[in-house]
Figure 1 (spheres, one colour):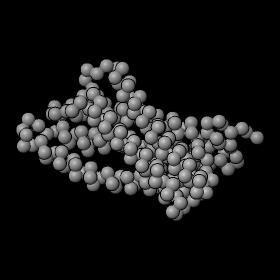
Figure 2 (cartoon, rainbow, N blue to C red):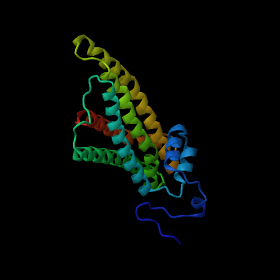
Figure 3 (cartoon, one colour):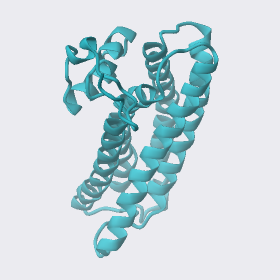
Figure 4 (tube, rainbow, N blue to C red):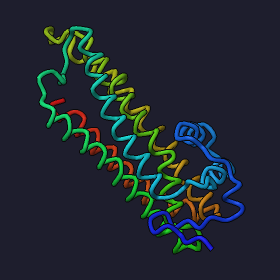
Length: 239
């Protein structure tokens, strides 16, 4: 009988070997646009599902987030208007440091969220494996982190850069609009994120109802903290 991988804890079986294999972009899009337990059970039945693949995808997402940051700053610079920070003149070591910070932030925030939710789910009667819980969280968290960067660039950096801040009377308007957008969008985004947490846990542990909701609570807290730290890093780093 094949031995389970020490990292992925997955033992191949006839059912898993016959399951569909998803490319990273297929799994990412399906996780966001088909957030149902049935779809997630199909995703976690992928023979490649496991902790190793989850780590790879999260590292990819961190690097993509860094690329979005750099491209966004270049886009803002094209307008020739006010910009809070540009990549011009920054050394390669600073670029590397920023990229590493984003990768570690993405990996450890998802790892902490998945592990805390998995522990509670198991305590409440769930039967899923940690490696699959981690994978189920990674499959939707990875693309959401990339989208998070796109939203910051297009929803915050870009609108506040196209205004001329030499006139103090104009300074409040763009920031007020951005603040309204964040106040309306952030709660909706967190509700959607919490719903994905619940769906992922339900598919892995085959549990529904109040127990799954309770298990997902620590995950959304950790994810919110991770996004807050990422936002501070985004706006305070000199890139």
